[in-house]
View: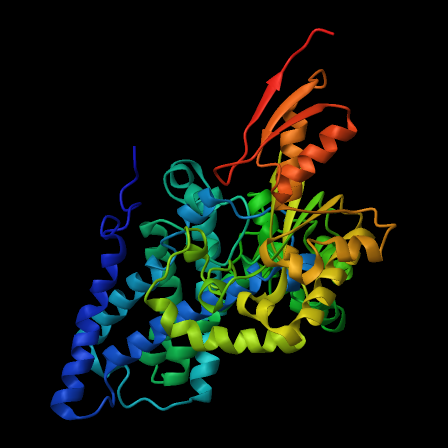
Length: 495
């Protein structure tokens, strides 16, 4: 059974749900063509706020997925799997919902955003008072209700189904929950306006600050400095932290507050580990707390367009097989500038990680793009980056580091032999695709094999296999290949 109002009205529309913004855009264009001005067009303000909220969430997504910045501050060390990404695919439904609610409000009462000042000090005090006095306790008790019986199983369990918190997790909830949340957000904005203290800065600022703090709590990255609470201890009751909210997802009977732990303290639902855990994570920030990977894949960027397929750019796009999309052209200039910055300042960095059969695998990237490998003056710098990555892996205790594509170019470094010869005492094994393929093939050959028929022995891979088998005193029969592949046939002899 599915609870009433748990599904979104446009759930089956897919990407066409964005057509619901069409009337707003149409009104803006009509006003511009008929009146020649965008002034006091509430449809335009709503669209701008929606875009700003989407950009805010995107920036948080980028920050969280920049593992080279956040690795030592992550609360949960698990990665985001595709199942969670699929669940949170339509995270922006709440923006569309609140845009429609705001449109209806402005249509009924057009002067809502007209003739209001840019700033109103009394309005700031009023909206802050309404937030603390009404929105915070209202959310607290609604949240507690959603953790009970039917409301949890039919509604709130969706939000708690994400194993690792992400800024999009905060927006991943049912239609009914976001109707309640829209009420929580709307009370301070509408209330301050009805009291005569409305301002445009509050209409824009309050939803953005609200979203910022929601993303903060669900970021899985502890960024609130410990010194802030040590200097001003009372702030512990006024501002929650990512650690504080993460405990709510591991111990769901505690830490129900919206943004202010004060209400958990008043109604005795504060998790006793909250501040101690925050202190520990903040103290360890900057230290390398990660588990040492068993395997590192040292990659590089292919081109400017494919660089936008990184997880910290657009998470949904990065979870799909890469293909050129029209929207990539919009981001191309920014990606090109980032490429130039990486060329000047960057060094090899962590891109992603995953666990396979109980072993940790990480992907590092050399900050160079494909075309740069063919620039004669860039050869030395690229090899320096690769060497530094190998030495870093050796210091960490990594077992194997594999050089990808152009990083193992024969003309660049002899397939990695340059580094092995320069550092003969390396503990980490430096390999590449051919090395691994040869190892897999050799591992599949039974120990009691005495003779092997090998085609393709004149290729680098075939030659390496033939030489290794000869050292094992296995008889190798060689045939000149007619195809760019090789075939191995085992001959068993009872000797």
